Length: 450
Image 1 (tube, rainbow, N blue to C red):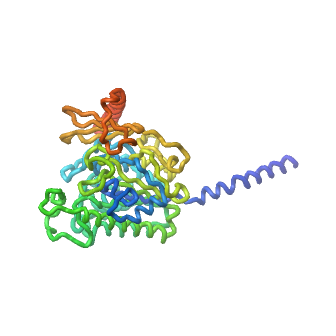
Image 2: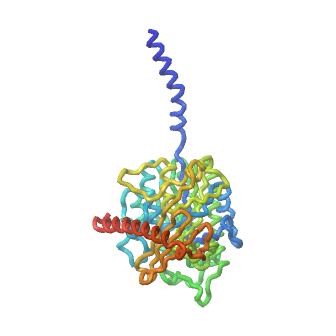
């Protein structure tokens, strides 16, 4: 009898100790995720990143209430590569998507593997939606729905008119009216309102501030045939676009971010929602990429350094600035970790979870990360960053090697290759090993069709 009594006491004690923890674990909801990706935004275009002429109070609010990263990078120098890295969580070179897809690339797109970010989140019980730009293949088998998005509204190509043109709802062509930035915002808010009862992943992929540089409330008069190359605007145009036009486009997107944040608050979801704001590559000729050199399409810092702001109340500190080096594919790994989403053992992510560093629970991780522009470009470029050092190789026929100490020389003006040829050789060998690795996998993927 005494033995049975002690066993009962032990059982009750275990229930008392373990029970509440189990209940708390079960009661804690999965965090929602809102990922906002801008297009061709300059590193220095936001108030929180030093812009003197653009008013971006809502994006700046995210920086005040979250963590602002100073050393974040896009995976690619143009749109498609970076977006491929985001959806796959891996270097885009592994699937051969290094260039921006064009309307002629109808046979190309991101292969469906079942391990895309939205597919993994969907398997974990998340409602998923992409509102805005895709640019990872125009055919249905490469589209957003094939990769795990429950809902899609937006466009499939790289650039789109802000006032006219064909858009898609799921994969059905539609022609909504109004300014495209506002329509992306409206539909994003609507998704939050409809899906508030279940965990959700929402990617808001604004086409702002990509050309054509069309500010709100001023539709162009030449509405016939505005597609493809006609959307491109250059400083040599007879009537060039202006920085003021660009700033208006940016500020309208910032207003949209404010409406999305307000929707989260109105639905009581703000505290349990991870909000991430970033961009797909360096800015264009109207952008402010300061304090960095060059722009989109290059592996100089102005072509790959991007804003990255993360807000997660109660999980990440507010008002913190981090110098952790991060790539777009790290956003993928961090989202999977934050949501407790598991991937199959066959999945080999290249990104890492940076949230322990942002929390202050782990020290800064010294990264070795790599870039390469497409071989089809007249002047192919490579780069790698290892801690404070950056190696940059410009050109194939007569390659120029540059070495920079980035914390001391963020503008890449003081080349140290002559002083440190030993370091140049060491970094070059590591870059060659990375290139061999990704190219070997790309060849295998092309043979298997996966």
